[in-house]
Length: 111
Image (cartoon, rainbow, N blue to C red; front, side, top):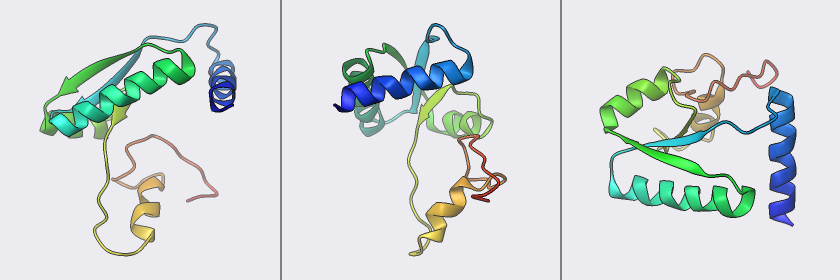
């Protein structure tokens, strides 16, 4: 069931973006064994659930963060650690102009 729903969402997203064919997918991650393990697991899930082949790209940590902040990656893997024990710390990461918003996602109602 999850596979069918996920594939339907992929098709809807492709249509919304005007894709008739999915472009090449590259998942970029920063250098560390744990980040690589997660990237490999995601690569397998993309293939198993969506039938999508994703290429992996490893980038040194400092370069990765700088380029991720500049939105240079099509798809990247990172994590977030809260600075203080309040849920707003996580929620503010998705405000349009927040320096922690490295997704390019923007929604006026959310802001």
